Image 1 (cartoon, rainbow, N blue to C red):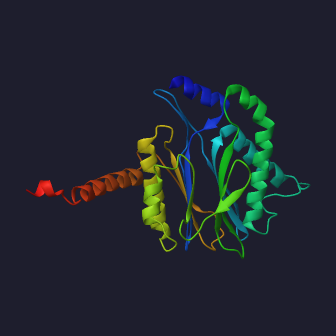
Image 2: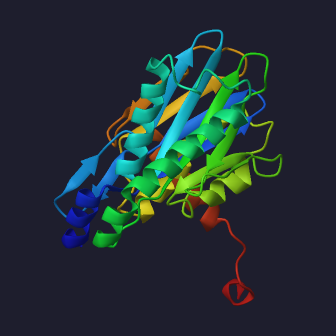
Length: 259
């Protein structure tokens, strides 16, 4: 296990779980911060980057996969924002899908540049991203950007997107989230989804970052970082576990148990 952990650190592999939920009132973003985990070795790194131009646009980027690639993409985004000669940057796109296409292109460029070196280690340079936010005059949107550079958005049936270790935290999203879910309930659901993943997979862990973007506000999203000892996080863990046990104990009995 430790051999794998140190190898992952050297090759820049970021094991993670990130999600974004779009409801009628806005968008929720949540991510863990663990890059590697072993018996006595844990590394963390923020996987959420926020870009805000008040009154103009608010964008949030979540990352998973190769840490080296995702860091390089974020660095390239900042480079283009500071370069007056850049052909495109986060403020250029009139539509959010144009920004998603731009990030997909940056990701592809970085993966191709690192591919040969990563192949020698037996690891991948691939990274996935979730881009979400709002541009003035447009509706809020979220996009999942695949390592190949293409992307998808949400639907009314599935108003959320996940990257990384997504299977453990998916059931609650399917049962609870709909377009009419309140921002507060969506945020609580995101935290439970992350907690379920943390409990089942050592490669995902705190601190948890949570960002709440209200539709049409076009200002810095509410942002909070939660550790295992944060009162809010501990309370959610306690109430969710107790609620599950109560519900389980109320399940119907088999016929032979009634005799």
